Length: 277
Figure 1 (cartoon, helix red, strand yellow):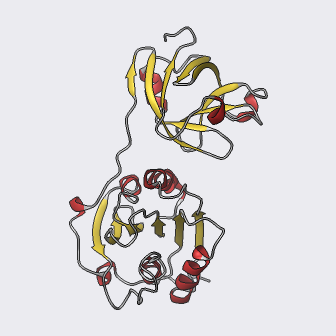
Figure 2: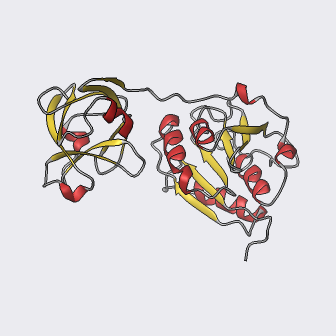
Figure 3: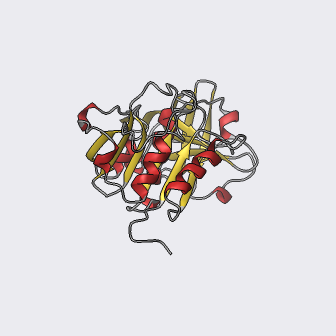
């Protein structure tokens, strides 16, 4: 049974599963806060893609307990960015590099109330390797917080306005047409666009049974649906995924990503079936 002070830890990274890194982080955190459950949200963020990690973490916030301490590590400039811990208005605490990775999550959690840089010698461990600092800085800080340590004991306070942020591109919406871009894709070849239901409605396309989908490499007509079973094998479709983004799909086992030659940040244009709303 958890003690009243033990908080769950939610862990997300781009470490992958082919080496010891995730396990070492678990070992350090469990050694400091053994009663805290550790929830592995994902360790398959595409390598070094801070914006993708930030987006996944923010979209996961509704499912993460408000008592959680969240550790996120996607760090192209390992050892160069400030190492920070942030308390949010919702009560969740976020730990990670100050490179924008945490910014969409703290916005989703109500904003920053307190932020500190992790510098205390009472918390961090002697660094074994500057190229892999997480077990010696982020993990001890996360576990101490989960065990009940006040945030202020981790280091000096920071002005929340100095924290790095990630900014997502907004779609350009006009009657009958949306100019947007790819913000993510998964291993099934489903492609997320930076389009929410309100954007489709603003363009007057929310009632369209099909949408024209145009990419640099070609164009298709995609049927509207709500689940993957709505589309025949190889058929293009669009639906809103569990994270609330409009997603281009194809009936299994085909890949929309490959079929349209798309990649991260690639432009996409949506229109009504006849090129209009």
